[in-house]
Image 1 (cartoon, helix red, strand yellow):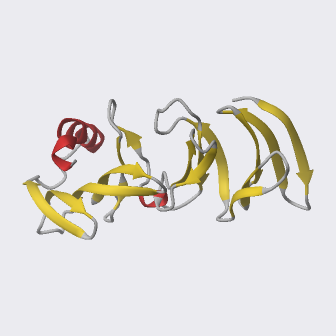
Image 2: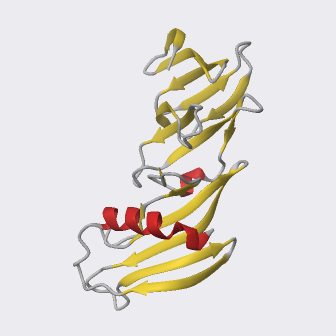
Length: 202
């Protein structure tokens, strides 16, 4: 990441940090007033994007692994890993907001594919949880699969429910029975399942 220039503006209790960036063959400015506002500006000062949902930080990272740096906004929330994403479009030489990306927390890319999977808690102190399979198209994240897991002591329907998703339609394709509290390593399961089975959802 090449920050050409930076400037700091002090308010009564807030610090606004702006940096001129040279990445992806273009120059742009990023400004962050922590826990308040993020803005993306052109070299002439025009605001190209702003987010006033109290972002705590931003990162320049190649999220979709296409060789260009994208912008991730991070937030302090009750749900870990809820981010906003601006994908760099090399043809337009600009950033595009993925409008519903915050619905897919803690997202990771499946190696060698254009697919990603997410994770979020769904109650019962994280014993119930979901993982969604999705891809990016234009300015949207498109969900095509879901793992919904219930493993609470007081639940009668404990199990791993796997669905194919097409728009508003959701079809269960598999149920994996689990005993109460015997599902120790969900992270390995999630990665292994999506990596081995993503083709069934395309």
